[in-house]
Length: 435
Image 1: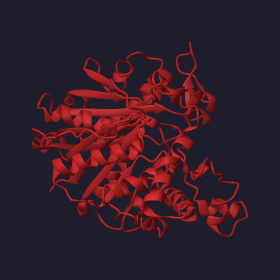
Image 2 (image 1 turned 90 degrees about the vertical axis):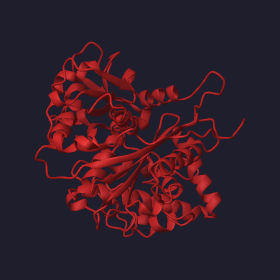
Image 3 (image 1 turned 135 degrees about the vertical axis):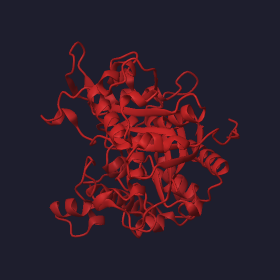
């Protein structure tokens, strides 16, 4: 198989585009709680959309177009055109829209889609939102009732991600497939098995510490507290115990996504029109400087690594930003190793040293190189399509100084976000607080 990656020439936007509003639901198990059981897709998407509009200071009449993202509409919505079914919930009846789906990368491509629509000059103000019921399924024939998604039903959907016509059906659990990134990192950086295991566990511990101070996070109990409940004096003893079993050569149970339900949204407008749209809002807009995108089918060796390198190359080339300018970093880490390898590929953490930063706690929200300050997919939760925009919501709040107890030690000006998913799409972009 030819392993040479194609390279795409990316050009600057025709006009600047800025984020003026963000919204996000709590990430949750809706059917498990009487307060949320029965929530519909329209209500979830509408909550995030209206919150983003309120945050931006715009009403639905000022928004020209909207994008709707859902990772698995066939499984989750029972609609052929899920974008059309939700418009009434946020006051955009009659306005045009597009649905898109890039699996777990959907929420990151949601930014790409919205920014391109405004940068082209066709629209001045665009809403982009994503919704997912990752933990439940619609009950056929019932208007709103949902039932828990069992693991066997979920695993059937993962087969939809892979080409099965000319390659073998990937019947191994995804955790085994995604040991690839940990094995690659260990081998190329010269780590021992113990060092790799410690690094993976510390990533999970840091993610959970971040989530513990985030009111929207799905799981907020720290691993230190859980370890004490189970009778362990040392958190790492718990992380290495049968309570946190290895699921392959490296990955443990704590390093896998917590699939759940949620929605998130963003409002973007032309940078030159920010004052017109934001009205009396006193927060600063956040400009999208550029994006980079790539994709590799999952039979490509080290596909996540290869596609991330290409997407990162594009975004640095088109923006002119240097790695040392990145103040805060987010990565879709439904397999925990992702935020280590992508942070090093992006140059946010030094090559071969990132694992040390993680083990020293420096990538937690109160460290000097914060990553996934909301807790990432293993603690904030993974509402598949919505996760990318939930990361953007968190990044923007951090850049405004509005993250509350989880606010990083310094006010970040420039952030990079790297999305990943869909066997496998990569979308990375750089945002910067407007002057």
